[in-house]
Length: 507
Image (cartoon, rainbow, N blue to C red; front, side):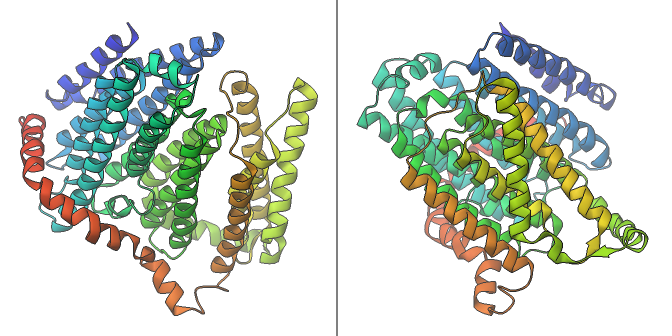
């Protein structure tokens, strides 16, 4: 009953998007009603310790919230744009597809929604069709999407035929019981499809170049669309329990992407471009967490990343106004040396905060907080937030320390809340986990050297490689995107043109 009700509400929003702007402006009210329903269902699932429904409804709550915020922002931001109604219609259609992705038990319905999401994203990328560069971006996304769709079809339909069931619930139960080599191949294919949709390196090119589109489009891409693979991984968490090899492959691919994309990010000056590269790095982090079986941490990371990226993109134009305020604070509070928060001290403080919070949880509730591997992973993720790269104010130091404490406290509170409900799978073997942590620690130091101008600045060759994204996008484009795009160009034109006529008929 839940899925039809939510689809009815979202279908109503799509229908209203074809009406007058006075009615379109009221659409957030319907989305808010849908949000309240998903919140209620999330609370009910939490109380009943229903892990599957808790993950689905909680993630859908996040999507509903993002759609309300971005819709309301875009309504005013795109005022005067000829294609404003077109964007709003695409946004609402995408949200409707996500409802099916996260709630439907039908393999066929989930796959069709997966495909339609890619087509709608392609239309969003062509928001300004008269700009030649947008077509290049759209072609790259289309190729990645077609490959991901093909792989997903092979994986999902192969599993359905193997187990003679087209129900996600039935497949989840069957996959959680035993391990079969033929099934592992299907799951590996699905995992590769997830990586393609998540836009980790080397599949990242279209996402990085999406700056050609308006800010609301960028916000929805980085806060919503690229997170869908992470959401689907969490929804299908029983599928990966016994298939450690699949998780190892994902962890290694994501680790390579994380190292390279985070280094490239540091060479960028434009705020929106840095945010784009950070999305690729964060998605890599998310996939590592999923591969490790740290679903609770991945869930919290996904929530935080989505909300932060939406806020960061929608407010990116205000960053320039912060500089005068920072200068006034320096003059008023004085400055401290950058050495006060070196990488080693920042990491030490972070790990102490985490261990202290974990000790409090263990002492108060009687069960273990996060593992030592998770603690180290979290400290490496959070410590850069404490770095001082140049002289700054005493107030800034205190704000950084307080925010770090607040974040870790919130994380531990969510851990306490979710620990009884969201499972933690057996982690990957030590011969995989320990090298990952070691490489992350080395990457952490490399970031410091780059940001303190002790690296890259003295190596023009390395700096060029980093600035060009290590040429991975160029290689992927030349060897994969262009040949595949040439094969599928005509079918793509037929489908996207038909979809465009349906969505654009009232413009």
